[in-house]
Length: 432
Image 1 (tube, rainbow, N blue to C red):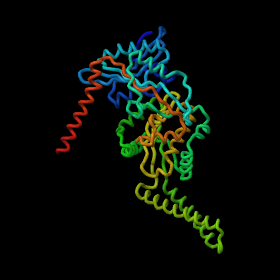
Image 2: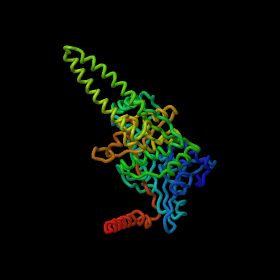
Image 3: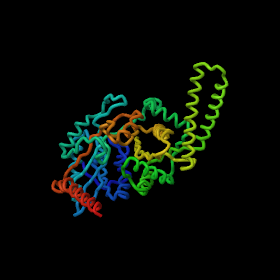
Image 4: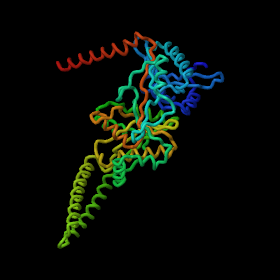
C-alpha cells in the first residue's frame, strides 16, 4: 500500500461518491472546494492505493491554520474506508499522522458516519451490518481520543439523526407519518399550498427565511454569500435544490368565502324549521360554530394579506444530494401561517422527489439524544420524528493528537482565556 495526496478530482470522486461503505457529501471533492472558499480551510485529498494504483480508501482533510504556524485538521464524517478492516485503518492512520505533522498539526478530528444504535418508529432496535462499538474501541486502539457520548448539538456534526429508507414503496413510507402529519398535509392540500423547486434567484428568499428561523430559535447560521457559494459549487458536479412552500391568500379567502356562503344557506334552512328536532338543533349549533371560526379565519387571512401581500413564501428547504443519499441540510420557515401545514407539505414533497430519483437514504440531518419535553430542542426532534424515520445514533468525535502540549493549550487554556476576555468585556460594557 502507498499513501497518496493531491488526488485527481475525477479519481477521488469515482472512489468517494460510489463507495459502498462510507460515501458522504462532507467527504466529497466539492465540499473541500466549498470549505476553502467560505470557511477559509485548506482541503487535502489523501488516500491509500494498492500496487496497481487503485484507491483503497480516501479522506478529505480540512486544514485550519493557527497562530505560530500551527494547524489542526478536520475530516468531516471521514474517512471513506471500511472501518472493519483494521489493517487498512491502521496503515491509513499511521500515514495521515505523518502527513499532517508536516504542517505542524496539533490534532486531527474525525466524526465517522458509524452508527452505534438504530431504532425504528416504534422504538424497536434494528440490526446493523457491523458492530459500531467494536469500531469505536478499535479507533481508540489506533490512538484516537473519543470525546464522549454527547446528547445535543455540542459537536461539529450532529450525533443523532432520523433517516428514512427510500428503497421502500412510497406508500409504506408515508403510512408511517404520524396522524398529525397526515392531517396537516391534508390541510395544506385543502388550502392549495403549492410547493416548487426554486432557482438561484430564490436563494435570497431562502436566506430571509433562515434569518427569521434563527431569530425564533436563537441560533446564528451563515450569511448570504455562504448559501450562494454552496448552491453554485454543489450544482457544478452534483445536485442541490431549494424547495419553496407558498400560499396564495386570495385563493384561500375565496375558498373560505364560498364555504361561508354555503354555511349561511344551511343555517338559514334550519332556522326556517318550525319545530326542529334535537339533532337539528345540535347541527345548527355546530354550523354556527363553524361559521364563527370561518369569520375569524377570514379576518386573520385578510390582515395577513394586507401586511404581507397575496402570495407568501412560507418555507424554503435546502436539500443536498450525493451518491445514493439526500440530506435536509437547512430549513427556513416563516413565523406566520403555520396552521396552513405548508411546512409538512414541503417535507412530503422533497421526500417524494428523492424517492422518485431512486435515492436510497433520506437524512433529516440532526436531532437530539435526550428527547425530553424540558429540552429546548424537543420541538425540533418531535417534528422530525413525525415523518416515521429510523432514529440513528452515531459514534461521535475523535481527536488524533499529534502535539500533546499544544493540544492541552488549544483545548484547555485557550477556552479559559476566551471566557476571561468575554467577562472583562461584559464588565466594561456595564460600566460604560
